[in-house]
Image: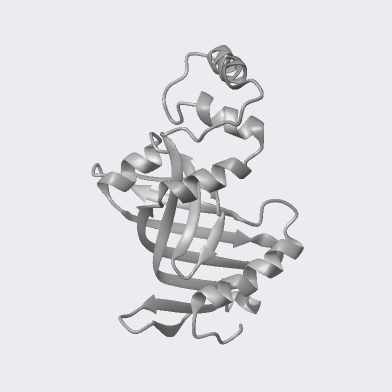
Length: 194
């Protein structure tokens, strides 16, 4: 495992490897949240950027995940790259990114995905698929050939890492594990038993 002082640098090194070896969506990450009721929920989301300030993804702001963010802003991410026998765990807080950044990203999405964002009441009960199909038809007609604006109920969130663990499979289940913990002056690094 490469010895890096900053876990974001190591993440970018591993992510570059994953982009070469993973057949589909190396940017997929499991996002785990919990609410006031103590229930934990996890789902796959797509990382759109990873910088010193955190890991960004986009979603409907009326979704269950956002409801849980508002109750408990502590979340966990998990990247698993099976082809590399590697995973990265990230723990930290979450914050909404500014509207200008959400607007800019939304403008890059395929038109069908933009229509889908307008049409879906994510995580809400749906009577049948016909209801969604009609919503898609409605918004397709509404916007015609115009540029589609970002819905006010859709935007970006950033996970602010406080702990990052890099796990690499080892022989005889003697896996290599390195834990980075955020401090006031940077990151502390600790090796963990398999």
